[in-house]
Amino acid sequence: MRKADEVVPASATNQRTKTSRDGSGVEQLEQHRFLTLLGRLPARLTAEQAAWVLNCPPHDVPILVAARPLKPLGNPPPNGIKFFAASELLELVKDRAWLAKVTNVLNQHWQKKNAAKKNHPADGLPKGHSSPVCVSVAAGG
Image (cartoon, rainbow, N blue to C red):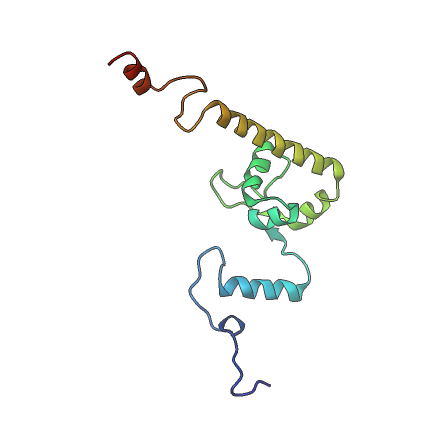
């Protein structure tokens, strides 16, 4: 029993507030409480939840899907929301060879991205090339 003068945080009440589609706010708190009581992961994981299981940032999940070590459930369209089987993912993370493959895929992806960034600086021109403005000024134009 609560005392009449006890302050209860708004997040602890059953009040519903408008939240975004991604389940932020009160709904996310309620989901966390439900999953804590359940004592296990939901059967389907979102990309963000899958990233938590893999201990990687959420932006790495599409890289793994494209390279195929991580397979979403069903046949989602390329721009659709992807879900992953929790049971399958929990088995895969126990496999050292699979984890090495995932690590190599991510390392190679980011090495290529960083190399491309080094070769094409912010002005969009390859390293060592002048912009047309610099060339015309240097030529006296």
